[in-house]
Length: 302
Length: 101
Image (tube, rainbow over all chains, first blue to last red; front, top):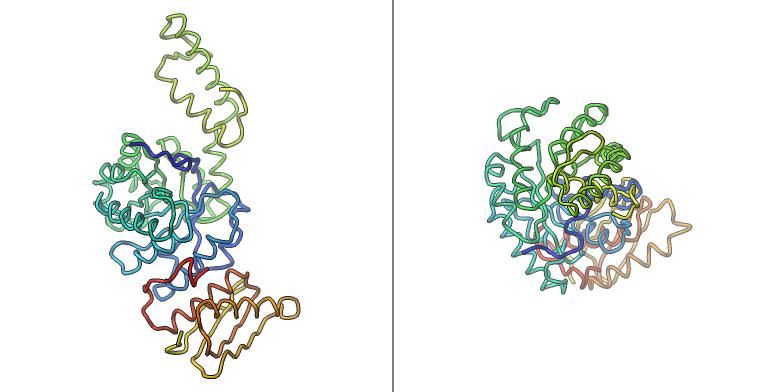
């Protein structure tokens, strides 16, 4: 079954982490225009401030106008005592998406889904209005990522959490990314095979903008849809890398037009700008145009 | 609603407010310290009293150190302090959309 929620497949190039407990952070992050903001009830909030963070979150969700930014809330893990009340406040406040921490199995997703549905009934929210995404933070989670992707129609995608994952792998984050290679590859393949989206982990060295851009360009080439970010400075470079260039848009437009035309003439393979093109390029070109349209840089008719 | 103990929520960081509530008898006493007391004192007081009323707190000593908090933050801090003063544990269910709104 496909999810008909209009937000299910929205553009999510950047997802910016914000501490839900800090009033100075939650009141105006939309001015930086990330595609999504992620209000954090988990690691950013100290263990003895989980209660205060929920009150703060509730009123932020109810009163702050985020100007179309998707409002994701990261809840505490299922191994804690906090997650059930976290879900109640998220649903009551009407957040767009709940991000499940430390997801290891399809059962984890189903457990959250059941609690979300119960909360939607309790607070009179439309059933199915709260979307889910799963953070994969362990080797076990990586091994189960296909099942996790398939576990719920509410779940639009999976996100890698590199810090915890490399700890579990018994290594550390390096700038080469070699330690994340297997996880990233497995996740993006699983996401595509199941029709879901895939998001990369944070890059924490804010002073190394070149390293950051290289990282983003690589994950885009791998097929990822977007990246988790920790600072507004990371938004623009990410959007630029994920937005098709004018050259790519013109080429994609040509590919779509030519394939439509040649198909009518009974021709299967031909060349565009000296490159061999056949039907296999059609979906990719369409995707480029959709991405360009969503990013506001393509106003053509295709 | 009877407060069981003194409790505090919030910080004195910019845009935040620190609210302390203590059990008392004979109504609400409210002490506000704010850098914007001249412009917003009346509004801050009104929000705090409304929030306490919704929570059915009728007897308390309330101290507020405001650092330019938005209305929604003031509410959240009063609710947080009262919630803690009820001493029901930090993951007790709250009345979202009812007393909390």
